Amino acid sequence: MPAPAEPDHPLLTLIGTITGRSTDIAIFREQSSEKVIRLKKGQDYGGWLLRAVRGRAADFEKDRRFAVLAFPPPDARQPEAPPFGTAATGMDAQALAAARAARGGR
Image (cartoon, rainbow, N blue to C red):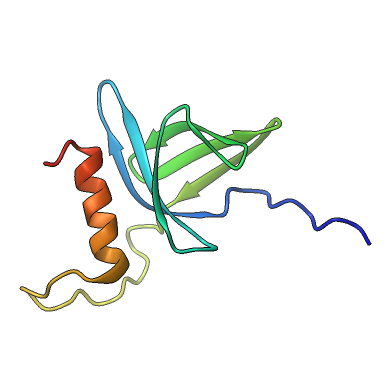
């Protein structure tokens, strides 16, 4: 039985980017576990090297293959925002905490 084909991109969903003068960070949700992870430019995930972090995208490279993980276009239909004052829960709270930690708690 042949081995399953290797994915053509990291199995991550981009949920945030932080770009700065000295460090660029991308925040992702693992597709298999829903765990939130952050990667700095130059770190790798499953053999995929994070080459660049841009405002709405993250560029990866593995074995001379390239993949771009991006947010949906700004005009794409977005889910309705929760009412003002609603507390973040579950993964949203974890993503927010990861983003704050990546910015040094700000």
